Image (tube, rainbow, N blue to C red; front, side, top):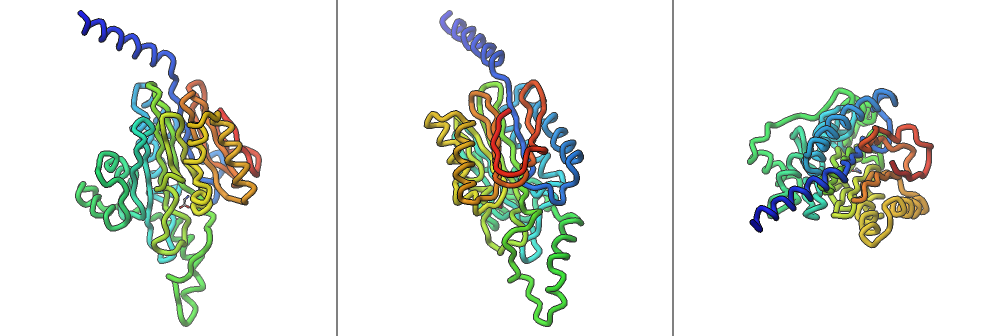
Length: 329
Ligand code: GLY
């Protein structure tokens, strides 16, 4: 008797939860439009992904699974600098980084500089339940092999073209040195992909994946597989894009989330964190969701390629004004 009452109570509470919590979703495809196509094409790509992933959330998928699916779709789209379409490093190789953070478990996992896999986010997902939760190049490749993940070349024609154009003069000099020609930032490298979701049970998760800055020194570590670039708790979840070193210097994702934990509304946390970043001339953007369902975004970069589903409609930041800005949906 007591047991069945408990069941009824749980059932009723579950019904109440699903009645009151409307899932929320926001995704990004980087902090610049370079090489991604025109605004209309990029918007179509983002909206298709938003629709597929929001349908999962609406049908009861948990936030972590929705984030993984969103990251896979963004990684598979060669427009974006993650998975297929990743930029090349200074030595002409692709090395990708990805991370996943469950807000409900407050657990971070990911891979740094992994090669020859289609979806680095799949490795981050596997590592959620592992004792060793962040693996770098060699270890990540070994894990892919252990999991029988087929070897995959994420190189696209346009990425090799970009690299060759940048390197054109290297091959005509008598002492050609490709490796040492490291560039501060490539325009294409302002890309990263990210997904933040709030599910019907009120659980948050964030995922971020990248091919890096492009033309970087071999061994450079991206922010995307650190809590500076991707962070989630019960209270808020954030994914970042832009220049990784700037994101690390601000510890941006964790900074925004910790302010929310301390009681600041997420929109104020974004506004304050981006104002501080602008004062320090940082170059990046971020998306986030608070457990209250507020969807927030911010940028110091010229653009933020992001779109969201509020439960009622799909919106985006593609035509936001240039310069420093934060906002909510
Ligand atoms: N935010 C991506 C990177 O700098 O690697």
